[in-house]
Length: 114
Length: 117
Image (cartoon, rainbow over all chains, first blue to last red; front, side, top):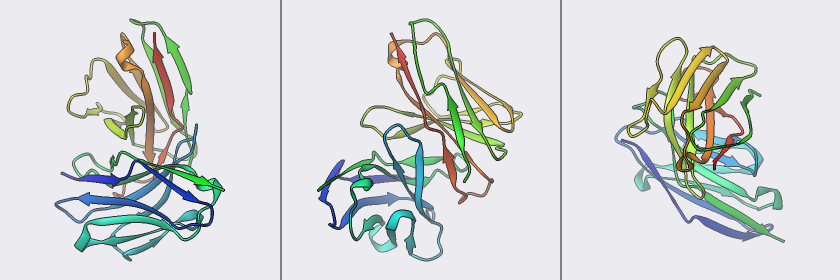
């Protein structure tokens, strides 16, 4: 069975600083991994996804993530944080026992201060 | 981009009553939709897979008689919480993949906040 673990339920950065949100996965098969963002009172929005092509995946809003099999990690980064990046971020993996449903991590709240 | 809507966005009901939540794919057809439940400060947990034209598939521990799912058309799935109790209060979110490939993007509805008094 697949699972994802997000380290750190809350991350705080200053505007302009590097954003690093950590995600480790567990999977017995090659995983398909996703990062979603949830803004207050809005639905989840896909930031990026890894589908076994390039290990460095670029997403929207300047975010990117690198798939590292040796570390079973898929950390999300952004070189320079904006105030508008403050939101809840979820790492997810395809649940191959339930079609294309997703298994989510517990989420990381990103706060950005000026 | 693809849009998935949910209605209502927020509902308050009395204990013992039933509540229906609708999930619609607005610009694509979805033979499969998923229903998740999100507790405060917690992750989304898959409740069930809604299949158009057939019975829903429920995850372990989810009461199928309590959470009735109907996938009436290729653009509509409904979740009915029957005989709701305060412990059913939660944030319910649906999603739908535009296509059926395992890596295709899933589009999420904005969620429905259910409060049972």
